[in-house]
Length: 444
Image 1 (cartoon, rainbow, N blue to C red):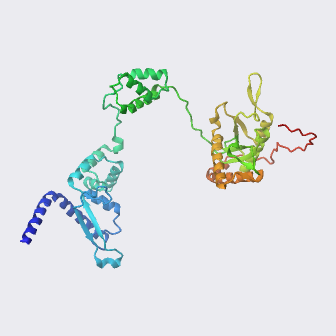
Image 2: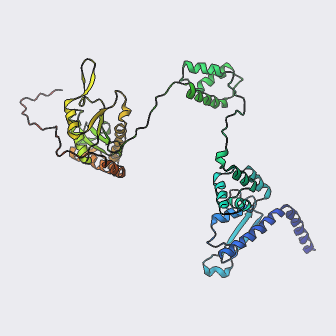
């Protein structure tokens, strides 16, 4: 009696499941046949395992072509009832395999077909199909290997184009513009004051028409305003990227260092840095100074050139009083005599940026910011901003510059080929003069 009930229960369950999963069983048999063929071709040592000759990517592609499920799929928990188990024979343990359990799951045909219908083809799939066709494969075989339908493959083959090349730009409207009635008023407000923001204008529109707009439509108005500003808004300053040529130009300028809080033997050290930068490789050199005098400028330039080992064709600076002078009633700009002599000694052409346009000297200006950040970080690592002497502080800066320039060695090697040679001797415009002080007056 119990045996008959058990058979009835088993038969009833099988009768329900077999009709529902007949296509899955057929797909499983086809997958098993293809797997056995792959095992025979690759020399697998046990059932359920494919040899090393068959890659994981090819196995996953074969499962997808046969309606299979990759184990890494996020929805592999849905078909837990349709699981086939494979176990390695224990007799093959000596060959290096562990006796384990491998699971293979198949996707239901309904879900598989819906995914295939919604799937947007990618360029990589069509390229793979074209490669298979060039090998002499038929359309059906090449489409199966690429994971696409035969009709889809035929469409792209006849078009001789990739999916990305067949897409059309979406330029038509899919719904009515909610701001079409009030757009002339919005344009009049923007023409009166172009700095008005979209959120401000949207709040005014809601006050004018309380029941017309929803809060979520503010983003639509902002997009409309952004497009209007591009087409009809005020003109913006156009910035062109500078093209740097190896060995063509060097830039220099002064920067204040008081905000870093450096002290010498406990006394605040109020100082500046002369910063020299090659615009192509960004190789830099610094020298400590106390003012923006010509002596500090000349000493910084000479020290940088001899440290670099070459001379660029041009030297650019801003309107320093140590380099540029005003002459005549028309305030005609001209170089100072000593600065002109310094440039002639090294064979550099002096250039300057326009007044109040600092970005024309942008390489050294940006290097100021980056170098001061690096100095601040190095001082924090050092855990002290006090130095026993000025020489110790200058050695600290020189080590930091050397480390930063090591990262630019490749570009500097290219720039060295365009640098001019150094003169035989430096100019040494600064001279030390010993004077006698007869009277010292202290002022508070």
